Image 1 (cartoon, helix red, strand yellow):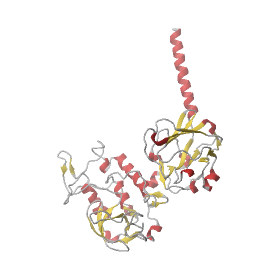
Image 2 (spheres, helix red, strand yellow):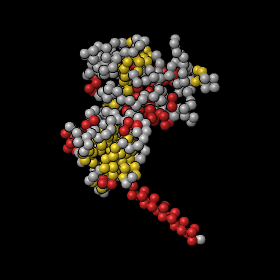
Image 3 (spheres, rainbow, N blue to C red):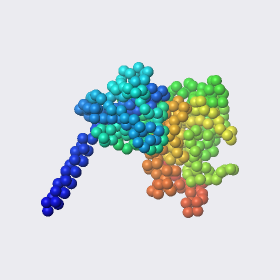
Image 4 (tube, rainbow, N blue to C red):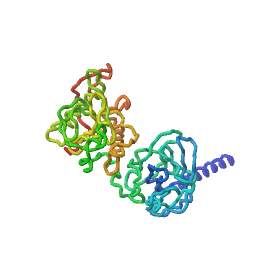
Length: 404
């Protein structure tokens, strides 16, 4: 009986010890911004203390896992305190940016902060991971040349010990004027799911690059629709720099409909229906702009132009992605992605969040069979693996912006 009671006592002490450690390891300090700068010397990490009490940072370290390493490559022990409801900025001692220098509370004495876009970062308190960004053991780029800002209002920031890329908004790099403040315009998932708007600056930019007539200048010019091929190809008039003819919707690859060299695929006629009967319907009474891709080819093979299609101020690519009617847009930010932005957020960031919503809901290509509970293509016979109809019955999941 004594041995049994002793064993119970040990078990109880163990539970209390673990519980005590868990209480001690809780924290309201989060990684609020990650500045993966175009020059590594200007890399910086911003923390935010989401509480009404000052926090002693001598209990904290930052661990870095370099280039997909499975073990910690570098540790930085923090010092000082972070005030209640306030920020704390860590930078390298090689930074040349005045805003970072003025905002820094801690400078790493060994040079630039040791990350460059594919290096996992964890905030640790008393040997317990409090907040985490990136992928341990995998060389996956997630922040290269980007400013990552946590989603939501700062008073709602919550640290997470496992990384979810959709807890952060990818902004363009080097937004150092946003350090130690929450003045960035796009904060919430709801704002991202509303889609980008066309900034006025693009309306005055040239459609064709002024120094190279084979690449885009990024301008968004007014034109008119003359025909529709399918979910990601339509025809437009030669106006205001747009050369006229067919245009392939940049960023998209919707499923095929039957054609001379291709066979129909699930959701192909749905994507085509959406483009014809919802987006470009009554096109004569809508403002349509084609935007070229800055620094990228104006056309691809098959005699097709490349660009973005804006209808009544809404981006067709975003709407099509939102319905789950195209292949994955990917997560790699190219130079042109960083030039196509709304409120300093690349269009690609809006696309990725819209695609994630479609994936979570099992819409379109993110439905059956990848998601057994997701919707099935109404134009497809899954038993015979063949086209069921080229006139599917389907309605969008989301309201059109100009009808809201």
